[in-house]
Image (cartoon, rainbow, N blue to C red; front, side, top):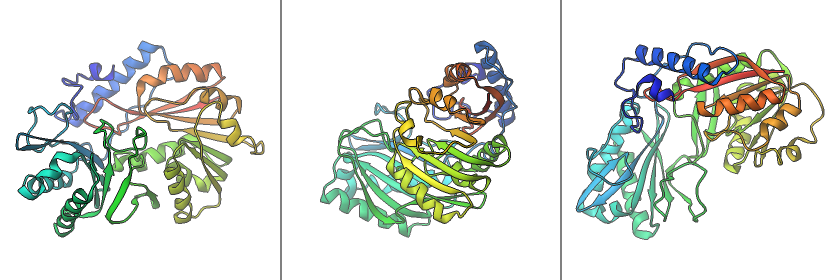
Amino acid sequence: MLAREIGAEDVGAVDPLAGMDYKAEIAGKNTALTRFWRHHGLAGVPDPVLPSPRPRHYRTTSRRRVHAAGGQVRFGFDEDGGTREPAVAESALEPLEHAAIYRFLHERITSPPYQRLARHLNHLIVRGTYAEFCVVFNVDRLDADTVRKIKLLAGHLQSGDLRVTSAFIYHDPLRSRYYFEQFAPETGMRMKHVFGHDRLMTTVSGRRYLYAVNAFSQVNESMLPVLCETVEAMVRGEGERLIDLYCGYGLFSHYLAGRFSEVVGVDSHADAIESAERNSRLNPARARRTFVAREIAGHSLPGVLKRLTPVQETVILDPPRQGTGAGVIEYVAARRPQRVVHIFCNVDEIPPALAEWKRGGYSPARIVPLDLFPGTPSLEIVISLVA
């Protein structure tokens, strides 16, 4: 709905609003969100959208689908292998360094020694910060020749002036549309470290965070301080316990650890929890921090949290795009936390979630939209709820 209101001409494009003046884009998003709120009869009034310090060239994760056929190799965004895109597709939302890495790889992969490898590449992924980059080669065949050729390419990447500090091979024999993060089909996929650091690192307002190369991390690094400051303002003051659901590598847990006596982070992915635990050592704080790898659902959370002594609680929920698991909001509301901060990366999840919070006795106290995804119709919405 936001896409139609803003006037995105091609909502299927990777950067449908990138050609707009950024002030006009923000104005359009404010208008679209207001209409969305009124259309659904939602409680509260959203604040003005907080703009991104980097409205373009901000994405710290990018990818290209590799198409090799008829002697031609294309690095594109599309899945069908058509010829609508150039040999190396580019986006105004990605750092210029990403484009340079893809062009560098295309030049070498199209040379005769790498023709067989090109046929077995599914995706190329670039991740990292604005200063250092990691390249992941997603392949459908993991044999000695594939590994040898990728190691040769990795050597070229290291010797080039591209600031590539690590590389990995990711095995996907099904050539799936899935290309990177942790919600992968069970196909025996595995990650092979080629060179460099075995973890990525980002720094947010002086806090350092390590995370696995296939772990979720927000794609707009420039907005992470704004996001954390927004959540901190909504938490308001200090408290006894913070429960951080869908905690990932502990972005909010460690950012807010100085405000609480105890922090409990829960995430369904073991790699994320392992990173969160390591990040406790990188970021000393007064809070006692515990991280648990467990499915987040109404039926599983009682087993995770049942041993906690009754104290005043603040709960943060930062679920994936599809929203919270079944029964999660009902269970959290029944715990009667003094404050809830619910973060949405998909506005369509907001109406049903707020309806569920209302049934649990909670209503919005403040609604802050953040432009985490400039150049697209999407917004990140942070909502504080009180009983």
